[in-house]
Length: 354
Image 1 (cartoon, rainbow, N blue to C red):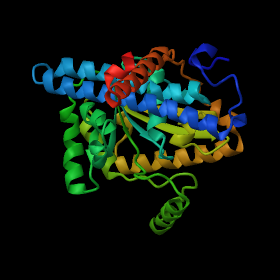
Image 2: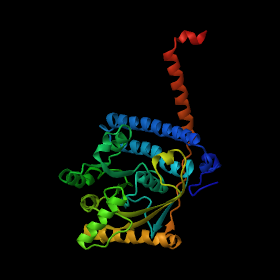
Image 3: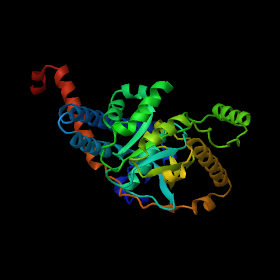
Image 4: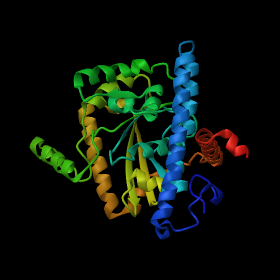
């Protein structure tokens, strides 16, 4: 069985057997194996980025950025691999009109849940190198202090916000200057809803729309303007435009990090992209409101006639997916070395020679 990325059965360790027929123990085994690979990879990549930041960046910012971008690209290709090969999820990236593969953009996306970052990286992977290593995002500053992943976010120059607008406005307004000489292309992702959607938050959003005399959104939270306005003005002269991304999840079970790591998810994910030039954005608030109303209508139409909506877009040919045979091999060597070291430390080494 092959998928849109061109990888084969040899690349996929779980496609030959129905996951639903596996026992709980098999799923836990897959969860352990992939969690280990993700963690070990994050450890080495984050440490390598910190070393590059400390030893190379003081002398050559450009060279350090290129190296860290390559490290990010190497590690973040785990995202499409996890979705498409480790699981049975068919990820399709479709475009209305055209989009520059080598362009730099500010990407707006609907905020579905805890795996939005993975969908974003899978989108960027389709573009090919230097993506997804060139992806940046607006994230909470608290994530910067999360071991391994937070270190990577800092090294890759993500934009951090604190939910304190006085500070956030300054940081976002200066972000464009900070990355003004970052090697193109790159994307900066922002989730303008500001929060993952829940039933309670959707009701609150609809009540807000009623109070303001705005159309009630049925599938999305009403967007927040201030961060988008500050960031778009900061980046306006440095990027090619804005990409409106609509993520549609069509899977049999709710997706979570645990279900993805345990190879227990199958279905389809559609990522619909549309490019907009800054010339279209006379007023950020008015423009973003219109885009979100259109996005909400599109999601409603998808529920009624999926095929009609998808036919409005053209599938973007995917960059060949990376094989992770080397990652498996390296992880096995690390495990074996660790076990032998523990035995050596626990027992008197001379006992092993008897």
